[in-house]
Image: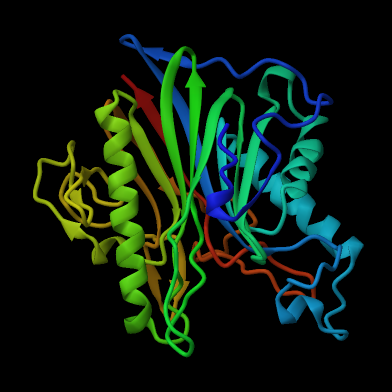
Length: 332
């Protein structure tokens, strides 16, 4: 476990959630000597708890917001219902405020799952003083976790964004290791052209980290909200089965958004200004392959047109402005 102070990162939950969770990971499927693990990734849209710490977004901290414990519990129950219905072994979550919410979700689910299906392992990371961070829940042991941050400098008055770190978690899936990289890149709010340089830096950082894992013999899976649609990444020609994207920094990876014919899926993960965006991604490199990928639309969190039902505080309706995405990863 790496808790390096040089990153100035607020860490919590370590690798293992409290002892109330049942021991035992889910059975993994064998495929010609490989191991298969299902992974879900979801931006939960500003998932705050009911304790006011001063770092909440204005729509939650306003005296007229009406945000309270009962509303949090409703959102918590809905989040757990989505995770249970999709049913993946590993769950990656963005825009969560605290590590305690990972415990809350696991507790919510623990009474409804069989013993081997409980999410016993988890990790959360956020920048010091940040409003939101990223977390991961897993039915498989977490061997280690690292947090990689980009140092942001600049003179007073110059553009200084708040960059969220990349969370690297090494999982043990039936005796095989896999490095999962959790991302939530700089948003395009405000001046998107100006913020592009920071997403470029985050893309190069991810390419370096994934390449380092692969060179050490550990396959790499990146996921999260990249705030950069898949069409904005450099596309590489291929036969549909191998790397089809080149990250800045030169690492070739595979994205399941493209079909064998090279065309994008009809449904994206984020609906914006009347069109689909593909900003929630999986990228794989090394000895793994991705199959059964899809944005998850078969649930109450999506409307009849497969668009996400975003959360609306005052009526207390909806789930998130992002659809979850899920896939199966075969570790060779």
